[in-house]
Figure 1 (cartoon, rainbow, N blue to C red):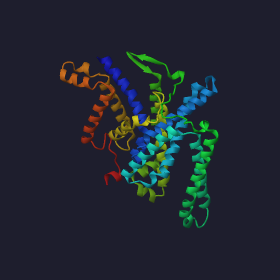
Figure 2: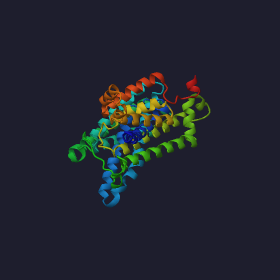
Figure 3: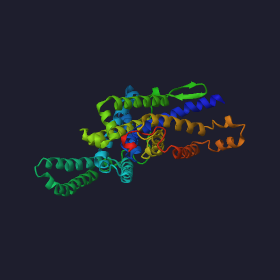
Figure 4: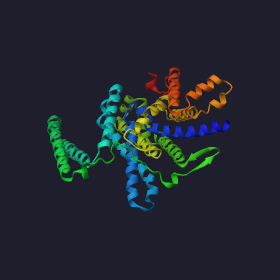
Length: 386
């Protein structure tokens, strides 16, 4: 009986670490900035696909390179997701601050675009997008150096947009006709792809009757590293101080000379990069597909909301609590403890599956938020008190 409970707690810590790692980026973007980023799961997906690409590159090198690919995939996944997050913030989110419904719809649209992009991406699409960006944004940059730029801006967009699109489309059509399948075949397609963990992560050891896998331990260690790094960055660095200042009182921070737009861009990029790291780690647990991120988006929002918006400690406690409770209910660990009360034992037996355990946990979260709508650790500050 006690062994089953200990096994359940250890398994819950493993699930909680996965949830926390997936929720860290959202805790920054949603918790600190108040942006409902529905594309967070797709940023995790980009990190997972980056890991897949790095794995294939190292596999082609041969030798022992494949055993070290994860060490290179982690920073690359962070950079790719952070760059995409920066583009998303500069191109979409920056115009929608203070408008949560529009932000939700816009980021949801971006998530659909990213899913379809991963399914369809090939050399023609990549070359076309590169040419479009080169001509359009390069032309805009050149024209912006003119003294009368503000007067010409509307005309420049009206001319450069169709010209850039036309050049990209014609080039793509020529490449398709010339090289055919070599440039039109999708890189990934709609099917899931497999990421194989290095040999040193495929083993495990027994702790009592519970089998601890090295991959789970690696994710726990990675989660601890990310939490400590984020804490030190927010508490000890100048930009962390600026982020916390803008979070508490944006208007006063702007009056004191803090570049709030740069802070927004940095914060969004940081949260997106953490989503990429989460995707890299989660790719070790199963196959990677266009819908990979959708499996975690609801759980990550629950972690942030239950923990308290903007509270890193709250996200840690909530992730561990939700993960442990989900594992204990799903593994039927409560039934042996409730044999003296048959109705309760039957009740928990009914929910002793992964899907039903999630249903029960979400129901408990709804009840909890009725009692504490601000979460475990409510945010305090002048903006909140006002």
